[in-house]
Length: 56
Image (cartoon, rainbow, N blue to C red; front, side, top):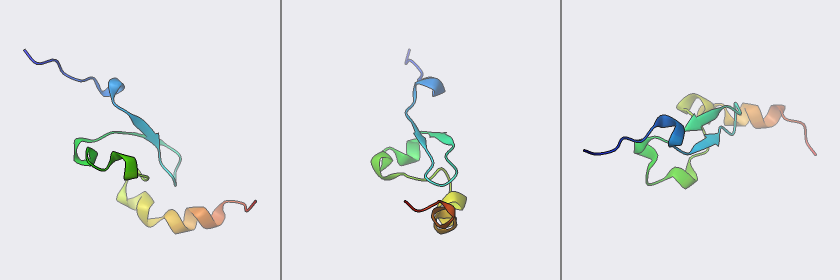
């Protein structure tokens, strides 16, 4: 019998826009290193989030 992977055992990243954690998905298996945003909504809002952060 195959052993199932628990969701808590999957890799987690922080979204670059909303700063919320998101979990690895099978559809991201080949590009996991390139994934930066948790959703298409955050990907679309990336410009507005970067402009509201204070400059250093």
